[in-house]
Image 1: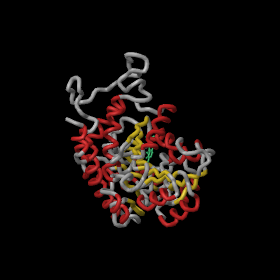
Image 2: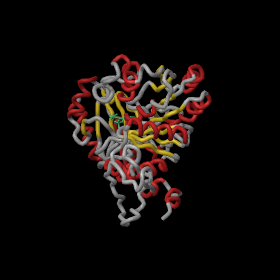
Image 3: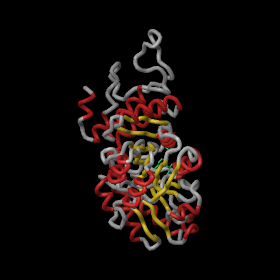
Image 4: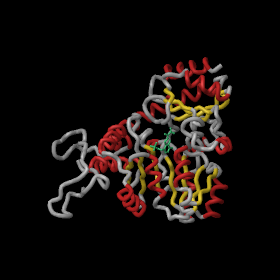
Length: 389
Ligand code: P1T
């Protein structure tokens, strides 16, 4: 069947079929893994479009096609990790430029921006949920790059992507939305005006906690070709086997996201009523401060929840030691439920004073709600609370 046939189908069908066309040589339903570093040429410079796997690999190309279609984008560049994708994006920005970035972001992104490329750019971290204030800053500073996470990791703050990316466009800034928490199933930032939708694919897109990977989607030809040039020059390319694993994992993205969300709603409602919980944050709850924007720009609310446990760090530690289905580990977005303490684990690279300024305190617990049976999950949380009294 022609590629065009699959590209016109709905999300769940595209996730399964785009890039997954049967192998033209053998008819294999599961696409081959081109585990090769190089490609034979019939004469110097005469080849079939592939020269070296840092630059291109047919298995990776299939994945890139699939992911571009899921984000309604023209292009996708897949990288070895989410962080290497972030670094690649910074490399297309002119040195000395200003960058406006959300003040609640993944700890590794903060570390990259504040310790690795800190002398290359002039960073301003700000609460991008304050739309008017942020637009005023964009107008005043005229940055080259606007970097938003929405929802944020870990506080699940939601920014108005349409208004902020429109303001960025007006001053000629490139806008990037880290869409890791929603996946392309629940949010499409490019449709909302962003130049780039960025993903750590180590999370929902792959969904099985067995690889690390990143993806950059864009419909801007210039940005895509510059990113490809830099990908080839710097070399953060994904291995063929990992590309194949993601191509397999993404097939079930829609049903996984539906179940993550269904379970997360029930867990959030359970936590909201729990006497040992100070407060709970889930974009689907009416109590979420940006619930209205969430409803407008997302088609679902995802599987991530954060809550503040009563009793400080000690209660948090006891809770975390006594949940078992929710495994205590960094990362998120896999089929299995995970739990962690961001202040000690994923966001430890942010100085304590900075963390506390944005409300990321030691009693904050982050849940990545998996697709297990919901009664089992709630019983597991109950057991944690029982020990945290
Ligand atoms: O881990 P890596 O694939 O390199 O992706 C980095 C990254 C980027 N953006 C967001 C929103 C992320 O959550 C991450 C990785 N986050 C974790 C490992 C974590 O536990 O939060």
